[in-house]
Picture 1 (cartoon, rainbow, N blue to C red):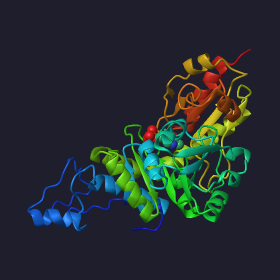
Picture 2 (picture 1 turned 90 degrees about the horizontal axis):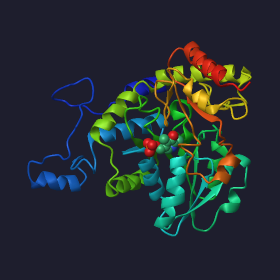
Picture 3 (picture 1 turned 90 degrees about the vertical axis):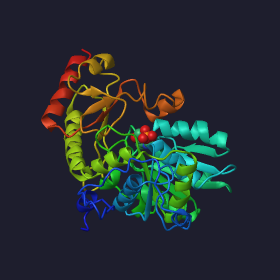
Picture 4 (picture 1 turned 30 degrees about the vertical axis):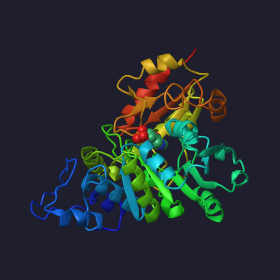
Amino acid sequence: MGKHFDTKSVHLSSIQDKKINSKSTPIYQTSAFKFKNLEELESFYQGKNDYLYTRVGNPNTDELGTAVAQLEGAPSGVAAASGTAAILAGILSVAKQGDHIIAATDIYGGTYQLLANELPDLGIEVSFVDFAEGEEIAGHIKGNTKMIYSESVSNPLLRKEDLQALSVLANDAQLVLMIDNTFATPYLSRPYEYGADLVVHSATKYIGGHSDITAGVLVGHEELIERAKQKVVNLGSSLSPFEAWLTCRGLKTLSVRMERHVANAQRLADELRKHDAVEKVYYPEDVSPLGNGAIVTIDITGTCDVDVFFQSLGWIKIVPTLAGVETSVSYPLATSHRALPEETRERLGITEGLIRISVGIEAADDIIAGFNEALKQSKRR
Ligand SMILES: *Cc1c(COP(=O)(O)O)cnc(C)c1O
């Protein structure tokens, strides 16, 4: 296989069916696998036969886990039924009852709910620390601390995490560093190469890329992934073969999609920065030499009527997700960040006029024209 990311992401198939020779990977849409005799069945438990029962393992889900691991430069990976399921499996591979983890405050709203509402019920204590404010993280480390959790590029305000510094800190304290790389994708950022131990994706977003699946992938050190796989199996959060197949299909075009997404987002951010109806544009810098991501967040609280803005978007859809090939907008206050305490929201800048734009792969001029029109209609005079 070629050395370059663009080549690896296209030639991801690791499955060879010697009898049929199909060009694309078949879909193993089966709940279980058959055995000729007891000896063959026994050989599964001896680790010689790969597949038994789809919840425990399936060629399509394995293909996805392995492909993303390769693109992240990590030795091993596992797919799960959603990004959230992959995050839980990653955390539980490291922390158990009585342990403590430290997480950045400005994480994805669903992850915040998992960490704030569910982990304490499992006996895992979580401290939310304002990494953005440069709050001293080391001061929160205790004897039972096991993990530091953050996102390579945060949501929705697009803070770029200092992976190098976090990795040094985690390493010195012998903690596992887990990074959600959903927004950046391995095309722009590979946290494992910076020393993260576990890297997680909501494959629902750019890895799938077409807004037609819900899936997650966790990659990292072999022994951690082995434990995470057991969590996925025992908690029943395996991904279905068809969803895994669709996700692999999406993954093959990750490079070309990202190239266009990123170029369009940069142009839109530059245009909106010049626009007098936009108070603030959040778009990171220096994420990677290949660009800065495909999400642009704007604040129009004081300048525009937010309801009118949303009504004036024409072909641009209002969708509470991101990363599809179509440009869409979401409203963090009412959706992804609804669960955050008001005081936290205010501190993070999740305002009434905050709009998160997921820039698609359409012609940049059409995207810019669409937003100019909505701003013109909604601007307060
Ligand atoms: C969407 C998202 C998740 C959750 O993924 P699901 O597939 O919806 O479970 C986690 N982290 C980030 C950054 C996300 O955008």
